[in-house]
Image 1 (cartoon, rainbow, N blue to C red):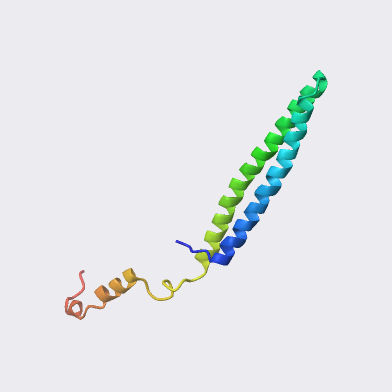
Image 2: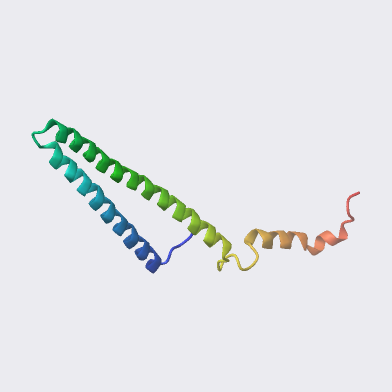
Length: 116
């Protein structure tokens, strides 16, 4: 499992929080304009208000879908980057490689002639 250091995690969290704030401000303002138009006495403005409010809802929905896409894409990118740099555990031979080396270098096996 890849560990992300605290500073990087907090920075990413602050970035996403800013994204949410901007997303809901823009979408909320559009929805509010739609509601204000919807509550008027004019049928034309009521229809326009419903359309504008729906557009505001779609802005928020699209932003949330984009947020999900970004989270997945960033996680994949982080996984690829971390798989390309060696970790402390991967600098030496693996445990399975050590076992294979012990088995293949057994001095007792050298007396046995190879199979033909």
